[in-house]
Length: 383
Image (tube, rainbow, N blue to C red; front, side):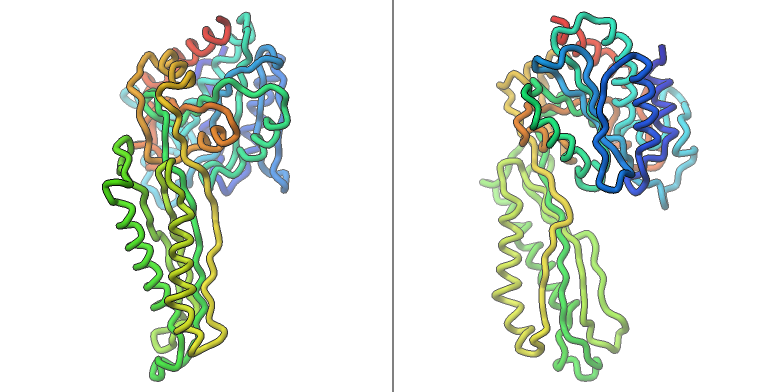
């Protein structure tokens, strides 16, 4: 039987950067499951270039545990890798390769569990859920959840295997990514007052977003379980203008709100939209009636906030051997599972301190620890 390390080498070899197809990896997993007679279904995207995979081991007519992870990875472009990113290599107990921590190490553990799970007297099913396009907004898992919603039996628990160094995590922030397009009016810069400078009005919107972000730091809006303990607003991309001697007609910028689970990120969006409508557009349109400010949502996912007193928390404490519950700053698909009514926790091998970086790695010790944790999940499903 293949070990988690051997399976990790196979998984890392597939370039599943989000802009690429994940079908080669999915085909490998499907063939692997076929070898053990494990039933599964594929849920493709509209173009047929990517797919989720959902497999069931054990009885399908009782509530079980979803073991979930994404197959896509972030790009290696522009990063100073000293090792081949899509080839597993080892040094001093560290296993290097893109996705080793985020999160093919966990996926390898799931596949390594399959032979034992097929032999075990499962009283509750184990479901393997592999998704696509998590890194670009948790896009793929939504169609998988739509399929689960149509089933008569809802899962008991979902365990998302994002890298937490195998520490139990019950919460993370939600996120909304937005694009703002400012349309002004161009003219020769010698007659600048006769134009509508899109960059300058965009800058005023960015400053307003900064002001709204500062307000979120108020003590009564904080949650000390998180780091940072408040919701954040950040502008990450901006572009506009054609030449210095032309008043710019267009400017576009992208911003995001990462909100504590109990807070509504759309409140910030409504506030900046009101500022645009009431404070900026009247002055812009007094010069040019074609002026406009448009906001478009790029992606979003909800936060996760599983109660420490819940059955889900008790189960992950059993699997991890720890009640030291924490939160993470990064988002996961967990908020979407929870929103679908499936109690959700996060725990997996590796650290996000290595994720998304050159020479990403997971330690062999973490991989072994994941195997042990999944062994306890299997024992629970048999109990």
